[in-house]
Amino acid sequence: MSDESRPSPAQPPLAPAGAPVAAVIPAAGRGVRLGPGAPKALRALNGTPMLIHAVRALAASRHVSLVIVVAPPDGAAEVKSLLDAHELPGSSTDFLVVPGGESRQESVRLGLAALPPEYGVVLVHDAARPLVPVDTVDAVIEAVRDGAPAVVPALPPADTVKEVEPAAEPGAPEPVVATPERARLRAVQTPQGFDRATLLRAHETVTDDVTDDAGMVEKLGLPVVTVPGHEEAFKVTRPLDLVLAEAVLARRRLNDGF
Ligand code: C5P
Image 1: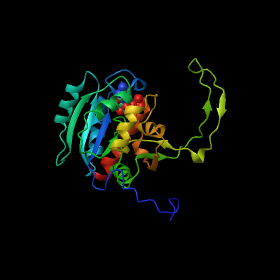
Image 2: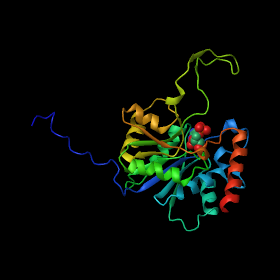
Image 3: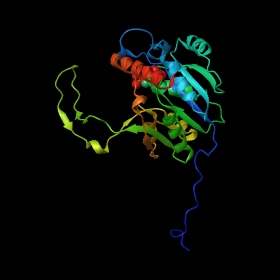
């Protein structure tokens, strides 16, 4: 049998079925687009800091056994006491807090530096997405455990998207360069899930500016796949998003007493 016709041996999954799962939550951003005030992750939603909602959302998955919170550089002590003050009843999840950096990418890298060796699957989740449902978290974990090196939850965009030549002045008219076919576009959310070695390699080798971790894995030439995202996993970015987030929490409270 020639080499070409010999079936290639099955590749073992990158992160085996039972691999322990850790989550890194970058929460060090200022949240300038939300207006003046405390760092975004520490602002309250229905009386509870956004970060605490995000931590609870990930700890709600029975697969996640460690959450590493990347705090504002001068706010690690405050974040530690917030986590202590909002203990999660019945949760066996462990927590670590590390100070973050100047960019999201640097904050994630600092979080990964604190990752103990036994965790084969790593999620990276924005503190600014406090309401992600546990089913979305579990779908990402399952896809990584099934052998995907990188997984992103994604939704088809409601709007048509244009590529433009950005204007120097904010608000000035911008020439449209292209209209990508909407059916082929997806808006991606977090948590993004990774085989540990793949994510560490991406953060060691990719230095270009990227807005998500999966983008770094793409730059390594490795496959990234999507799973269905969820409309409640939206990112709290602008003041109206706070109103929407509080409305979602109020609806949950009505529906299931959460
Ligand atoms: O920048 P953006 O608002 O998209 O932030 C996404 C997430 O990255 C937020 O949870 C934010 O706190 C975090 N971030 C960070 N360190 C930075 C900038 C953003 O941890 N320097």
